[in-house]
Image (cartoon, one colour):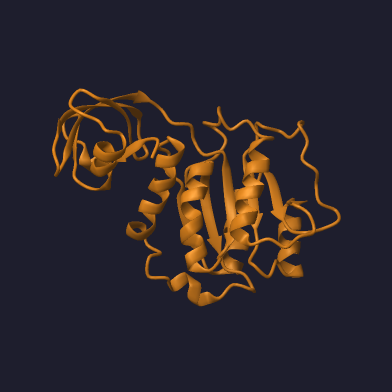
Length: 251
């Protein structure tokens, strides 16, 4: 935990009282005491310092001084719905990597029942995203969009989402686009990662029609969670995501 994140409604008159795992972390890991200054941020808000006003076995009270804006996310991810346990494991990492919008879609090789996972609601997945933000030391929340209907997503959302962006489609192919240092860092980045069994030909054709370039990590077939993190790391090296306030829209 490199940043203690609090929810906006937890802050009252510039102060916050914590009595959960964050308080435990402050006491047992950071070994903080009265007067200690900690790194604190508000979810989807400013970050800065928190001074310990009081500390006990039950709670920690902080005075907040937040003046710094967090960088926005630099990439949108289109992800064919993986198994729910895989998605649950992946969400904190996507938040930490700086993904702005996570579009979880249906596909021919996606089990429809995956979208019925009991935790797939804001109260269930928000803590997972915050976990990633606390690791990365930032406060900008990714937006998770569930789109089980492939046809609706590809006709109503994909064209606008892709317009004017640097768009990449993860798929093993001999014609994959090499990334170069000349990649346009002033464009929004959109990455599409398919299901474990891969995209079908007609699904690939939809992305090609929307000017997606094939991007590959080689001939080995990877799990979707492994592919996501590896591809995002590669793309992050080619795109300037430290000054991206205008790159990725907040949907």
